[in-house]
Image (cartoon, rainbow, N blue to C red; front, side):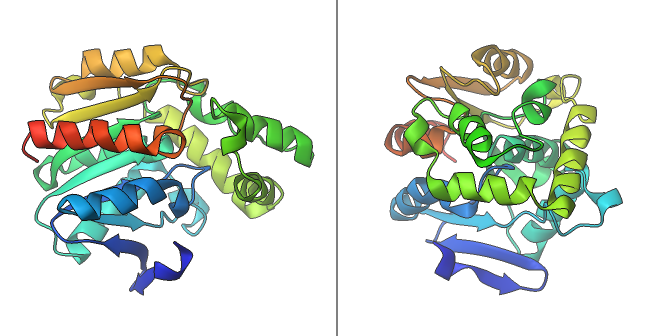
Length: 254
């Protein structure tokens, strides 16, 4: 999907299809290609899929935080003149989607989270390697998925490069700290937005009880499980993920 990236102003993004925009937010370990399955399916089913590149490593260090990423997404929504959007976030992207929804509920008609941080302290810090040789990084990356083969060389190379780039590593740690500070437990009961929670039953990073807590705390949420699946459902089981999400969108008429 590399060649389809558009650059306008400070925003780089992929855009496909016509209809209600589904804005997809990637996580720390996730480039835009993680969502290939979703980006192929939903434009054929009446939605516009938009995947902005998050400025994880390009914001000034002191501004590198979950709340500033949420502001960035609001600026992007305004820049594109979308009246209402559906937000879909994985891992850190889920956390940013939650905070964006809390801050700007009038813009968000539906929220979808999968393997989201925001409730569980160690989700960010412990799962992301701080240093290590290639084999160690490979093991850490494989641990994110139920089937280690999903951790392709491209994914492992990307994490290895980040860990060995001092600037990126410092920013990654700042993001992890900010995510821990921005625990959403007190906010969730006040958030009325329709929310779809899709979770891997074998998620090691944000375990299944995290999904159950999100479901308990959010007033208008539904929880769907995918078996034999780790932290990145849309990469590991794209077809099942798409079917569940599509079913939910139709049911909620979003």
